[in-house]
Image (cartoon, rainbow, N blue to C red):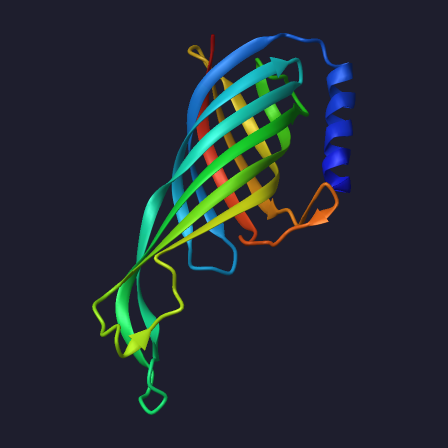
Length: 207
């Protein structure tokens, strides 16, 4: 993917200009994600590890979205063409797991002292949907909904943030957009998740 290659080249160029600090940070974060065009959002918690090299910070994040449940009406197809279709009430449950690899470049300050930064990165979102239908006569009706539906989507991330150094370490605040990738290594893939935007706040402590 051309965009991925550009990100990789830009990262190498920036890294070549930086003076390595070699400082490692560990921490955590809380975040909020909203999927554009859908009535679906998650509050998440995550763990992050940083490697600081002057103005560049390489960050790996493991994030878990707290499960969400929605009441909904499911359509039932009649097994007998002489009988009308029907509906049944049920609960739709969502859970999401994310893995991110980001590069943060500090426009002011640096990775230790903090400042304003831009971020770009790659990741994967794994979304599971559980459909829990109420009771219905399976001899008379059937449904096209699966009990479990799984979606795995490669993601590109871009955003801005601010990092503040304190006595115990650093705190950061950032906003970003998650853009689903439609090609990987030149091969087209299905876009299973929509664009989403998110905000996060977290801490990172030097080792």
